[in-house]
Length: 120
Image 1 (cartoon, rainbow, N blue to C red):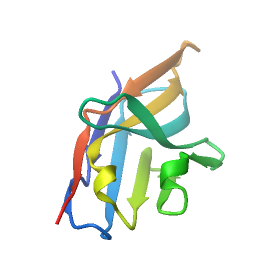
Image 2: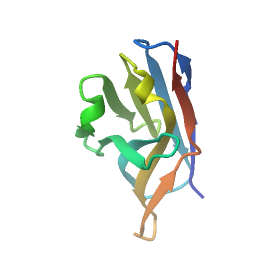
Image 3: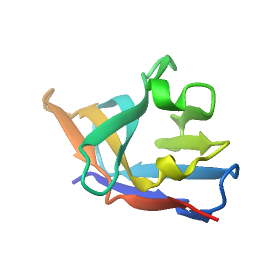
């Protein structure tokens, strides 16, 4: 069984920074893409950023230049460095991991979510 444990959320003032982490544990053949999504109250869950196994990253327009996604393959962990935070960044942030099991099947897993609140 694969588990994703997120950390790093909290309350921060506008213009501040936070760093989220999501560590995967369990057994698999290979982790493929890792990503962060967010869901604000009353809104759909949106992709924030993603990163391939080779390190290629992609960002939503609304975080371009402010957020940075990275991964440590040795630790099976994906990070999201969030700078210049705005009140509209307030949401529950979820990590998502796509992987291949030992049987060759592809699976997608979600973390439990971590609250990020940007407010003065």
